[in-house]
Image (cartoon, rainbow, N blue to C red; front, side, top):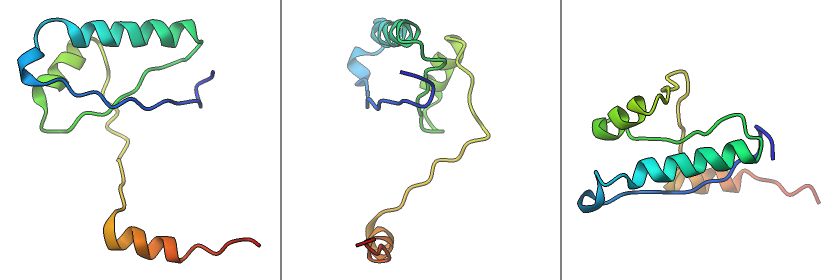
Length: 89
């Protein structure tokens, strides 16, 4: 595995289980796996309004990547885009 390999895991902790160390345990385990597998970084996304999570990640010494913007295409726009594909038969 190298820096260009990636896996996606969606994780959401419900408010009733927050504050018990589970997120720190999970991140430390993922950090361990990343180091063990020779990965140079661990990245994740958080919504801008989720200040408790942002504060937690900052406390864990994670650095926000302000220079990146996430794009998404859905619905009619996705349908339109898919119709523009021409198979290279």
